[in-house]
Length: 296
Image 1 (tube, one colour):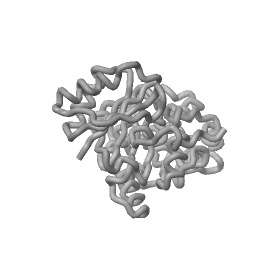
Image 2 (tube, rainbow, N blue to C red; image 1 turned 90 degrees about the horizontal axis):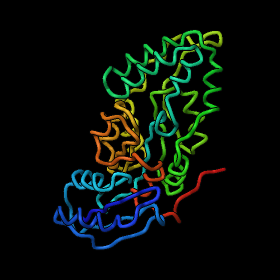
Image 3 (cartoon, rainbow, N blue to C red; image 1 turned 30 degrees about the vertical axis):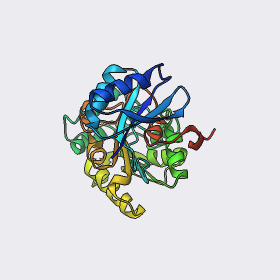
Image 4 (cartoon, rainbow, N blue to C red; image 1 turned 45 degrees about the vertical axis):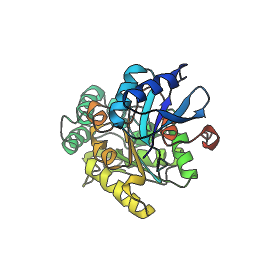
């Protein structure tokens, strides 16, 4: 099956197609056609056969360290399901850390978050420990933070473009449902799934409803969404940044690590490190003329 090399930069440096052709040649392959997806930003080369996609991509990253590269099968690149993580993927930063900042405990919580996202400690135990630190916080702080989120560049464009082209788009997060509901509406997801913080007398009790949304929940959500959409896991795209995203990223036909921790980077050869989330569309073969710009 033919493969495609997709290269995305901000902007693309000159001569990248020649570098890609040289690298492909080292693996016994050669380009048979090329296509501009976005002038000066994204292009693809179709190869005359298949090789080790991970090795080709790694070699290209070494040769072209400032661009994002994917090597994918030509057939079936456009996905019918998008499953996306929220914190540090669709939005900048970790919302639980921002909640902790309201109580002056950001450093403590952030340190636990970092270890959990690296896969160094159990996610549920880490969530319970951090949520306990939020005991007594006014619940309206969740809504305040949800209203002041910084969205990752290209997030809305990715979601709305895939939705317009018929994909089912689901936001799934180890964060909290009062935040994911806002993000769902803002970015155009069809649905969301996240943890629920218990509240009593308007303040957080320091507990989250069980069972929590963890790595296995994310994988289950991917499977459920694919089944509801009438498609296979091969027809799905999953994207995230942390260790708790690994099962869904590994299971999806196109799993993308977005500015990710090492635990997730090791799970997939498809990574976005230098450009924005619009790149996930170019990896699927979308051209600029097919992409929906973010709503003002």
